[in-house]
Length: 250
Length: 250
Image 1 (cartoon, chains in turn red, green):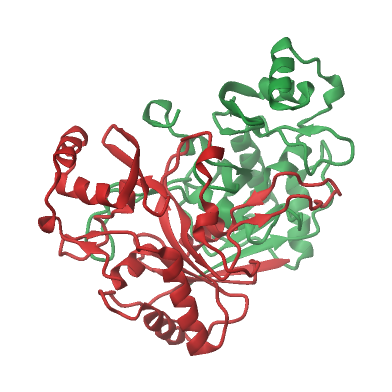
Image 2 (cartoon, rainbow over the protein chains, first blue to last red):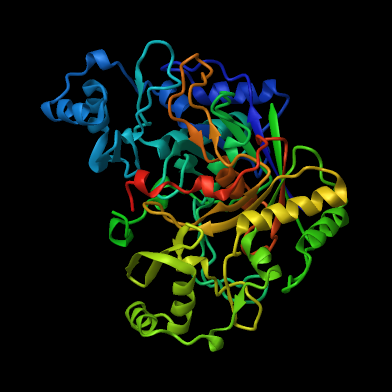
């Protein structure tokens, strides 16, 4: 049998701007009586990364543009929140039925540019996506390497909606230390038939797997995937973005 | 900590039409020295389900319609394969750049109506999706209950592409015995902030997690997810399909 463990790390304290997130994670892992092992992958939810990086905006500090006021009226949203969403966006993908789907400056297509009003402390501030989630992942990976001597790929995850299917799923918005896509093109399957176009978005599947031990309500922001189900590489979440020219759904 | 195991079951033999798949799975689980435990979820890949159910078509038996011939010429595909794809479809969603994305009669939106020419034995036959994957899941679940006395939800998984993001991911195309969507609407998160619109497509995330211990090339078609990360319910993969009227991307 092939056995992978998905381990939710409890005991991460409330994260604040300026906190050393890697240090908090390493301490929490040790407090659980665990240590990082070769083959581990670390999945960290975007929320704690963004909080540690101070990616918070108070709506009171925001002056909405006339367009943000108009969009807010159309969608039934606070125009200051719309303004923050637009500032994070490079493009509006859809705008209808109270939903604002944008392409972020990183190239992610998601609701509200990934700006989140839930799960932020009582201050009522809005949480933005990390400025460069690959770099956030690389920093955590480097800190774990320094502190423990173990090479652990890091995925920053966030939950995005998708067309056609109900519900949100966790995907990888930052990757460091592993290939986000496994390319089976040209390999043979178990019957000797050549696989022609199979590219598995393994980093997204790992992000989704992490949800099983995390859970929105449980508030477990850090998960170790143990069992060596990755291929080493520098990696970047950009590899998971479909080229606009190849995307039939833009 | 919260610990979930993803266990790939090896030793499932080559599956043929008419095989008792549930029996093959139960035997393979026992041969691994395992038994089903309360809290387990069983994920079975579509391919073995379709094979056991005899959902195979030889292109030689198919007379392509004039439209299939035309589409085949446009997309560079065998018109007989196109004919099979069209027979499984209720609607063409996109048709461009060699890609044929359809809505299947079940309501799934995927490439080629889910018709697969890879991973089928040397006969060269095409493998169709199960006729009713929820019913396939329910049959396996009932057989496990009869044989072991344990209630194990079953997910039938398949790997689908998606807009905007590269690579395919495993999703749930059949569900029995669990809620496919966890609804956090109105619940509070760890900071007491009410979660407004969080519906996690947990069955899809479980299907994705199963890939970590399965793998296209390894050819492990059956995975146990152990650790009790589900909510009981009758369940249906139809709950994962977005209502056309609410889908901004149709």
